[in-house]
Length: 510
Image (cartoon, rainbow, N blue to C red; front, side, top):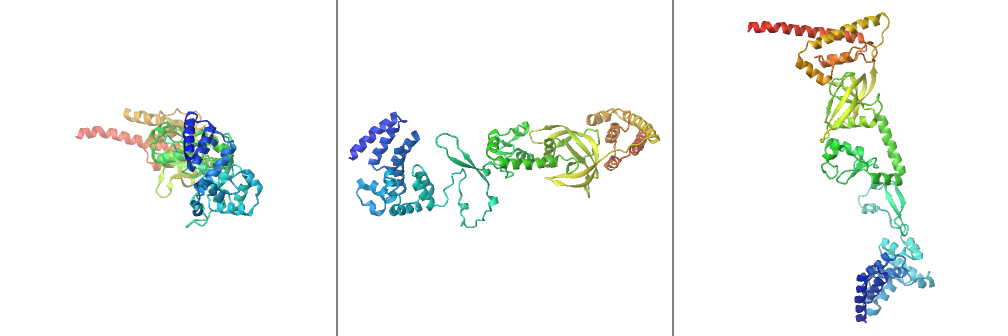
């Protein structure tokens, strides 16, 4: 008898090699292996049959029988039985009334003996295996299993960890609000339709621990929120997780949105995405306000209408400049540092014209002054200063005061041109390369709320202490500002003349 099974195994093995997609060949090979008592190989062949033909009911039933043999080894009282009846004995001891045939089940489905045997089997078996076996055909057995095991094993994509056990040592009970929401998604991969769960934590950013928003993937394969990744790259040109260098990404700034992740989030996590977008919009709205929490660059003196190029390399100011660009305002305030107050009382609002970024993450920002302001209060945000401000404008005058102002305006302008013309060539070249040329005189001195552009240009190039520059910046009277410029030019011109007169006398004495 054994020789017949061995010969049949050889013949069916040849058939399976020549025709690997023939379901009947694998079925016959499984029967030959069953005759030789090689249960695990029998299971393998029947699984091949189901893979080739999922609708093969006979293969399903035989697979159930063999799984019972594999998962329910024979008891001691059965090991001494005749080997020819060992298979039937094992099946009867553990799976009687369940896996023999559907007809036998129908004869006495409510038998107490069968029910008790089922219960014993359920309590000593991995529940996920039982659900797989019983879910193929027998709804009655599946219902019996649900009576023994209260909760069916999760079919979600998330693995259940040991810490999910209530009596685990040191476990902190989780509130319902802390449990991430899940979405049931219908698989569309063909065949029978199965449900699986998508966990929101599968789409969380590893940096902000929130739902990915504008997800980008690094060359090393890690996905983050765009804003989170940019903030990390402000501090170091490396991937936050694996520390791979991202210098090329910094140089090109080619942060392409990962379309697949974005579409999955949009399709299956619409509620979470809506909440995430609302938070983002609130942050952007707060950042775009140009009177409250205005970003402040604490560095140098800046004046309206005067160019102010900056080399930005500190992480906090990289973030600040990027936010100014993202909100669309392209503006930030410039103040001096103050020993006790932190920042100066007066400052100038700058508008970004261009940003050039280098591979190390630093950048050169071309900005120009547009208006003056006074600081009402200030605080910090993500490392840099922010302030609530009020804008300053020059007071308007009319009648005789206006005529006097016009005369003063023209006179101080000519005085400024004469002073600049008297400078040495190398000094002129330095001034022109940094501040540009002197603006022309404006026919209407009060046309600009901040005052004539040439007056701010001359204040920027005059060799004044910052304290004096700051005092003039805060003046709201154009007349007072012009008079201050006149006094400064007179003093500087007098000193220049004295030095020129003293130079020949010094050479003569030497």
